[in-house]
Length: 77
Image (cartoon, rainbow, N blue to C red; front, side, top):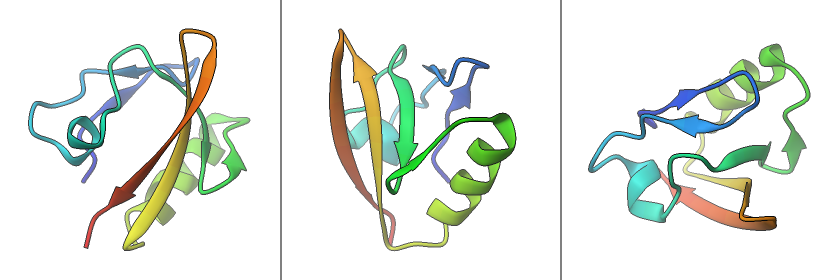
């Protein structure tokens, strides 16, 4: 489990200390744009992509931080 809250604008909040999300370098305030190359264009898409990502051994998340897009790779298995 990734252990974070996602606001309506896809902003990461309440990332849990020690979680996989924190360990790879994602930070509170990052704006999630894509998961595994798929855009988050709705809440339904965010839920679907989050569920799919948790079934994979590796996922990528593209976030906007300070005006720059950064890509993080998350390995869960």
